[in-house]
Length: 188
Image 1 (cartoon, rainbow, N blue to C red):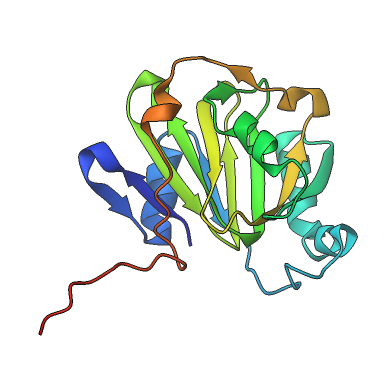
Image 2 (cartoon, rainbow, N blue to C red; image 1 turned 30 degrees about the vertical axis):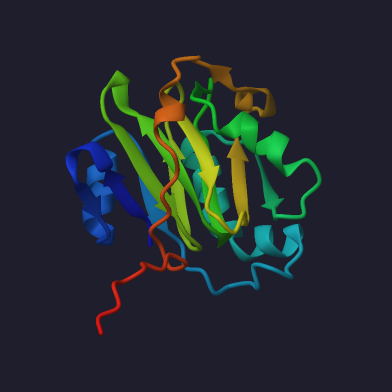
């Protein structure tokens, strides 16, 4: 289940329906598909796409997407830091950014119309669609692991258009999900 925050306003949303409605008010689609259809670590990309074929076809039909693939990022992925550097800078795209998380987690930061920065921590089973032209950036959580289905209307539409606003450097990822451990004070 995604965790939605606006740190500057002390807002934190973890309930599915509340998160879905809140994000919809910004034009962001959030849904869950269920996460136990395939082994997110060992399944091949074709097995993953096949397991979610019904949902993928529905999105293609409704959103005009023509292709889907699977991205797999792990700590040992060659060139991972240079790949992540591209994602970590605020940018827009000329088409929607649609991702379904099969394994791992990461944070999408959305800069809503130049106002608040909304952080959306996605986990296994979460689908997110950020509308074209929306300022955003992405970070992996500490374990640097995500495997996701991506949908495209046109592969060239994924080209990032960087804003160079610098706001991305002010909002570092703070992952709060299932791998987060809070240090508590020990009393004697």
